Length: 253
Image 1 (cartoon, helix red, strand yellow):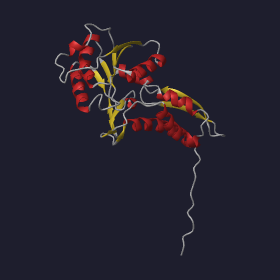
Image 2 (cartoon, rainbow, N blue to C red; image 1 turned 180 degrees about the vertical axis):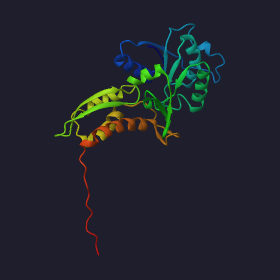
Image 3 (cartoon, helix red, strand yellow; image 1 turned 45 degrees about the horizontal axis):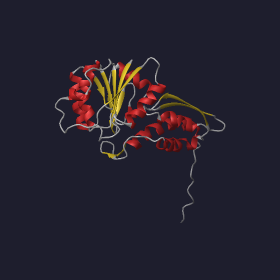
Image 4 (cartoon, rainbow, N blue to C red; image 1 turned 180 degrees about the horizontal axis):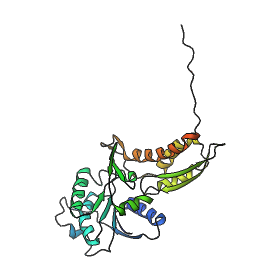
C-alpha cells in the first residue's frame, strides 16, 4: 500500500515516525509537509500544493492547521488516492463543520474518507465522532491501516498465581505509539492496579489529543483516548482482579 502522510509539525511527525517504525514492510510511505499560512478564504487550493506528487492509495492527514483540510481534494487528485484518514485530535485543527464539508468534497470525487475523533477510535469497521456515536465505513485501504494502527488493542497475559501481568502484546497500536509504550510499562503490574497504571502511562507518554472540553463528548479528547486504552486493559484483567466486599455494620436500634 502506498501512503502519503500530510503533516505540519511535531504532532504529525510523531505519528508517522511510529507508523514507519512499526508498520508492515510492504507499505511505501511518503511525507509532505504542508504550509501553515493560509488566507481566510482559499480560492485556489492548487496554489498551495506541488505541481505533482507521488502516486498514493491512502492519504493520512495529521495536520495542525484547519486550512490543510481544504487542500485534501486537490492532493487526492494529484496522487490518485481513493482513501483518506483525516485525524481529529483537536477541533481547532479540523472543526466539525469543515470536516463535514471536506467529506462531501471527497465523496463526490469517489474518495472514501473517515474523520475519527479522537484518532485512536479508528477500527477496521468503524470510528467515533461523539459519545456513543460509531460511524461504519467500508474501504479496504483504510481498514488495512486500521488493522495495525488505531483503537489500541493489547493481548495481555496474567500469571494466575501472582495476578501480575507477564506479557502485553500489541495487536493494534495507537497511531502515535502510545499503546506500545503502555504495554511495556504494564509488565509486572498487579491486575488490581493495571487500569490505573495504564491511565497514568497514557498521560505520561504523553497523549497529544486536545485537553479542551469537546462538546460532542462533554469531556476532553485526551480523556476519551485514555479511556479507550483503559477499557481494553480492564476487560482482559477482570478475571484476575481481587473483588472486595464491604459488610455494613449493624444497624442501631
